[in-house]
Structures are given as structure tokens and as C-alpha cells.
Length: 334
Image (cartoon, rainbow, N blue to C red; front, side, top):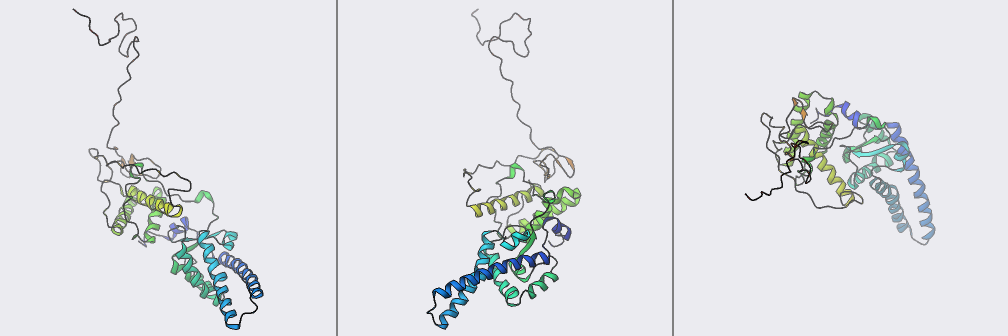
């Protein structure tokens, strides 16, 4: 999957932070952390002056781990990757696929940061950031994270297009835990840029990505769904699960409604390809045209009979000059 994730695509979607801005953010965080550590240490020593040397040493180590390691990890977890220094410099820690970090990511970054930042005065972190193509330090490599610039022009922000309505909720039972984050990043980049690709090349990339996702999920991709629509539906399902995991429901303050049954796909129209029974998928939200041209959606809306006119008024086929009374369904006796 590395050939699909080009440097240009990464630069368009995720803007890695440079070493000067990262160093300034770390410096602000360290100054604040050391100031808090000194204040807490003075307060604890003044309150426990009768302790022996061993207890004082143990207390000092505990304060060091709590204030300089535990507090940054907690702040980074609760703020979703934005510490005080990163917030001041417009930076944020995200996963490799662009998602928010969790506790395990912050824990690995904080634990490795003790060695590469505190014990080596940031020398190892600077060397690793200079060597890395995306400016990642050793903690980012082990945690699978990336520090990006959050303050970017809104006009250049890439948005993942939503799936077709008839695919929403269809893959709710699909196991997505085995799909690697690098593949999610490739899918996200394809969905945000498929409108700029050549139709044939884009269709081939969608087929390859859909096959890779299906291989990791253990369920084959449905043949009645276009590959691009399948990728959009799977990405939408993953994002929905992230929201439910973060907020405990469909969203903060959202009412929980019972799941609606998903109708079975309709049979393909005559002459339609194997991947376009419901119409092909496009990022603009139109489902009737694809890479090969307009495609019939495969079904026609049912004909609606015109409403009957009120009693005493002529119908659509009656003439205004006719003297015959309107039909009432009653026949006089012979």
C-alpha cells in the first residue's frame, strides 16, 4: 500500500510540523511542567519536613513521574493531542491516519519522551526529527503518531465524501479491527482526491483498496456495490464507531433511535456493469454517472395515479360543455 500513499497526498491532507515549531512547543511545555514541579515540590517538602532521607527520595521520584510524565500524558489524552505548547504554536498530535490520539498513544509518547527529551536534553528527538521525512521523533514512530499543523487555510481542507444513502448501516456488523492504519490513510486519501484522478486509474485504485480492505476484514466485498462506494461506506462506518466510542452514543446529546432495517439491493438494470446496479459513486453526491458515462439506476419510481376530482366537478378528460352528470357508480333501474 505504500505506492498509493504518495508524498504529495500526505502533504495535502496532513501538514507535518517542522522542527522549530515543535521545539518551541516542547520548550513551552517543559517550562510550565518544571514550574509546576518546583511549586509542588516546595509545598510537599514544607509539609513533610520530618521525613527521613529514603522517604524524601521516594517522594521526589514520585513527584517527578507524576508531574513531568503523568500530567503531560493526561493532558495530551484529554485534549486529543493538544498540550499547552502545541495549542500556542497551532500544532496537534494525531494518528498516522489522521484520527485523534488515545491514551495508549500518549502513554508511549510520554514514556519514550523521558529518554529522548528529558534525559538527553532533546538531542535524540532533534536528530530523529531531522532524519524523518515527516519530522517524527522516536516516540511518534513507536506510538504511530504524527505532529501536524492545525492552523491551515480552511479552503484547502480535504473532506471525505459521504457514502450513498442506501449503503449507510449496511456494514455495521463488519469487523474493522484488523485493518491497519496505513490502509485507512490510503483509503482516506483516495476518497478525498478521487475527483481529481483519471476515471480508469481511479477505478483501478478503488478496486485494489477495496480488495485490501476486504482481505483484512475477512468478508469479501459485495459485487453489487461499486468499489468507491464500498470504501466510502466502510470509512463512514469506522468514523461512526469512533464517535460512538468517544461519546458513548451517536453524538453528544443525540437521541438514540432504533436501527432501521436496510433494504436489500435492487436487481441491476439491463446492460449495467457488475459494479453499478445502483448507479456509480461520485464525490459530488450524484449516483447516476460514473467513469464509463451515465448509468441507469436500475429502477423506476412507481406511477402515481392522479387524484380523483371532487364530486360534481368534471374530471381531466371531461369537457366543460358536456351536459352529462359525472359518474357516481349508481345505475338507475331499467
